[in-house]
Amino acid sequence: MPFVNVYYPKGLLKKEELKKVSNSIHHSLIEYFEIPKNDYFQMFFPYSSNRFFYDSDYLLEGEEKRTENMMYVSITCGPGRTINQKKRLYKSISKAISNHLSISTADIFIILNETSAENWSFGQGVVQLANMKEGKE
Image (tube, rainbow, N blue to C red; front, side, top):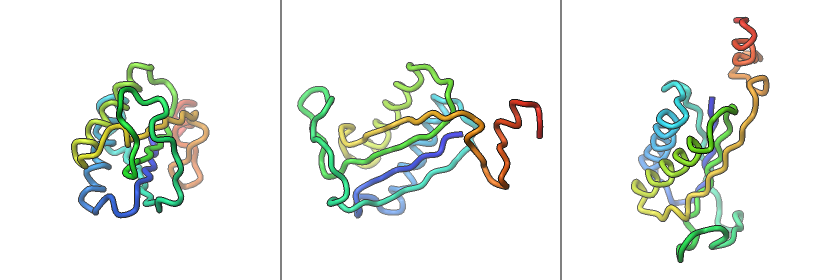
């Protein structure tokens, strides 16, 4: 049940590149979080450079620095994944996006927000996942 928001520098991604980034994230979620293939909800937001402030090397290893190509990937999902699953997901997303766009993995910032099933409605004003846990339709 992940919902993904991706913030990226205005002008960095063309339509076909947006799709590659989207597919990279989705395939990583399928592989490492074992989500259903059709559990696919993502939004992309271009930002102006004067609206995103960050430190160029906070907590990065080695000599790499963040650049003007920095992307922020926010994934909201249900709880229950192990730390190892999360680490593999972050690595997979970073490598795939970096390979498709030829940008540094240092420019790919990922945050995972976990929220319980009763906090989701996939439409119709229904709490589908909580109802499934209770045995209701």
